[in-house]
Length: 99
Image (cartoon, rainbow, N blue to C red):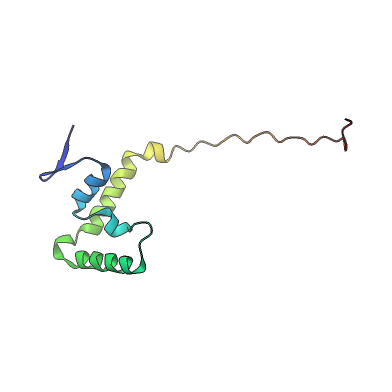
């Protein structure tokens, strides 16, 4: 099954989110190893997008998508199983073993 947003095909989950929101996820989350100058430019671009009237609903859209993902994956996310503790090893009461 293929998923399209407008005329664009979403191949991966990242594609789907980017097409649904209209901006790349990296713009909002950053990338590992970015410089301070790159970070400042990224945040400046993000502010410009949020100031655009077309994107006024973006924070609400992101919250809705996050809630849908959590709801869809809740069984896996909240399936917490206590792990069994390993048995404690008893120390030998002998202070020196004979060879």
